[in-house]
Image 1 (cartoon, rainbow, N blue to C red):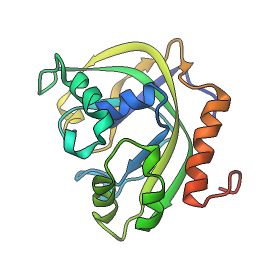
Image 2 (cartoon, one colour):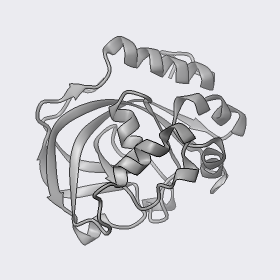
Image 3 (cartoon, one colour):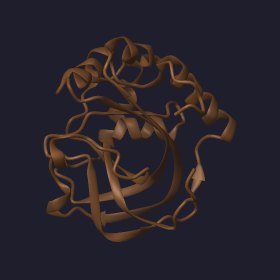
Length: 198
């Protein structure tokens, strides 16, 4: 693992309800295929360390498992769209990335994320020649930092390069080393990946 930085200028857009699940330690899995405006028209893990940029526009109750409907509704309370500013409170350190092309492998990790199986499959089959990136991320809480949203931050893109450094103060892991490793190994085992062989 890379040492943790003291500042960051990169955010990864992710549904606010997924950010909540990661913050609670309920999952360690992100599933990415990319947005419409991705550079090179495909998602790439540009960097392994980044802040989570919570987004609200595309998350819908029918796309997440029923157990997360209440959490999704909570993320929308008091949110006015379009947003004028963004608050960063979570930092992610990616420990593993596994590319998935087969629906069967994707189905096996369904217990390890909050998206419905139908929605996860739609992500897989969009641009079917491109692999789905399953990212396993260790999440750290940080002192919240709020920035104005600039026009270049908007749109259907995954990565958001920020115009200013954000200090990463008081990084605290949401899961212990043992609990994080346990969840990672469960996902890797479901994907048929031998821990330490990637």
